[in-house]
Length: 337
Image (tube, rainbow, N blue to C red; front, side, top):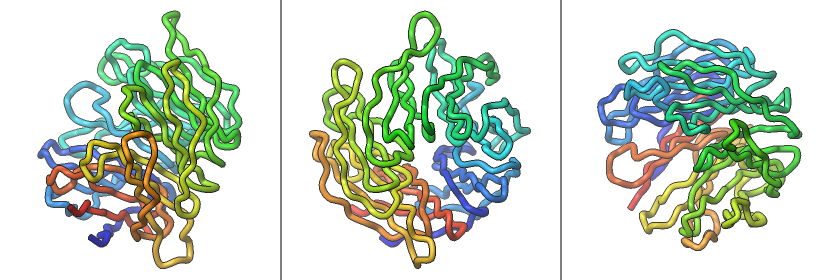
């Protein structure tokens, strides 16, 4: 089925999928980098969406994450605002969003992940500061508040952070062409493991069990070519990366079982399409052993930079939402079967 486009703000860069208004239909929150806004598109449950409602956040942001931060059962938003050097929390207020609560970060925060790293049952934050070359951790407190925790350093260009099971943190270090893993320790800090090599210029990470051995694996979108798959090993590390050719300048990768065969697949946003009529998404069907069939591509908007997953029409199959940074749209791709 061809992609369907919806208008959003200027230079959409990331999408967070959740049921924001508690109607049991998935909605979309889109962070727009160049006009300091978030677009909220409420889902109709049939694969279509209502026109956007804009929320002003100021600055310029590359990433957002949806999670129930204050424990009220409704998904909130955490936003890495690189223009204001802060992480912003937008609490869900009956399907809209209330006042912004901000916490200062290092310079140029460009990604945030929400997870319980220290095992106390409260959501924590990890924020990659691209300009400061650090990763800031914030410990969660009651009622959705946070306090500054440790700052991790020693990177070349931390561009993306992802949570691993057991309180571990995976960091894509772009200029080093590697992924760094930090494990939560009993003495209240993080211990780094030897880095794992990715492809050239990793830009994002996805976590899942690709070979069905019960150990989490990683996939990285490599901006200078393809997608890298790093299978997890029993010692907590990762095997050398296997690279698969994708489209031009892959910028985002997600995992889902698109054909419901029990094996995780990959979808990659290929961002190099400025000046072209359309960009592409590459889909790699998994074989269940950690390997993948060659890509199949689908046309979307101009310069797609992020891809997100959700069952938007309730048919049980995961669909895709794509942020097209070059034409102020998002694309919806419904899975056919």
